[in-house]
Image 1 (cartoon, helix red, strand yellow):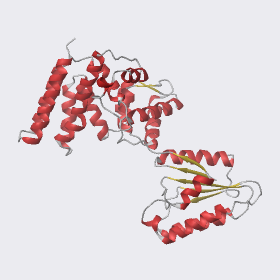
Image 2 (cartoon, rainbow, N blue to C red):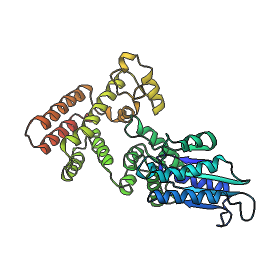
Image 3 (cartoon, rainbow, N blue to C red):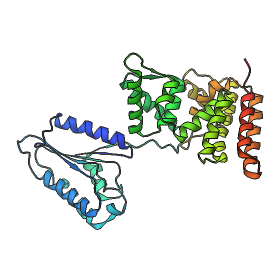
Image 4 (cartoon, rainbow, N blue to C red):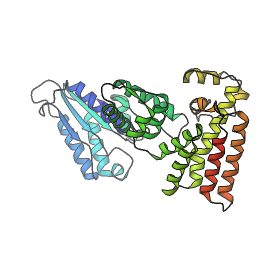
Length: 363
């Protein structure tokens, strides 16, 4: 018995297909093995699906040998109206009893589902008797999610023979998000776009091929501020305001985090923290005395959230520390103005962008 579950729908489907091919040897002629669609519109549908699976499990292979019964994309195992109904629970219990009674010689059961109620007896039975593989979507509400997604992107890009420039990888992560299916789709588009002769993905390639999401716009505004490109930052801010985004939302999602990370990165650089790669940088931060680390952004699980600071290190070198301190104060005043005054919000943001760009050191 095998169970492949998790909130990462794309990864669950990929791994289930891969395991099914492995179990069947890639030879599914429609007679030996059986795949049953687990999508149920209601509780009666869920019961019928369970009945069909039980019947299939109790039927020996037509030509002898092994038989794989795949309950594919089961939708009725979650805690919702359908999943809680007595009719559904009766069907699931019938399936559990069939599995607990033992499968016939050569019969293999495979379950794939993107959600399952882990309080139920069926889940506990699977934990004890099946080989369970779980693939959860990366939680973007937690600090450091970008680092996890970046690692996933790099691994999948390597399978396609692709490599990313640093800036291109940062933007791709923000645009594609944490969903494995979306990441795979966007990488395939880049693969086709670049062709066989070019394997290095540039920032311009990502901008051309990957759709701009809200997170991507937030990232692009921050990047424009980091390099002192006031025109680009203002253009993106105006686009967001015209789409109905609030000025306070733009301020607190993009501008304030960018300025704060630049300031912190500049401070730790002046402390002597260096690192040509992320691991070395994170290690150098962890080696600082506790009193020097306590004010830096922290992960919920504990420890310094080094990733945003690492991304800001190169850009922070373009600013003087006193200039960034002045920009921090300007951002505070602008945020207060948006909340407490009747000043034109567009004007407040434009003026702040100009102040940030003016702080960039002239070469």
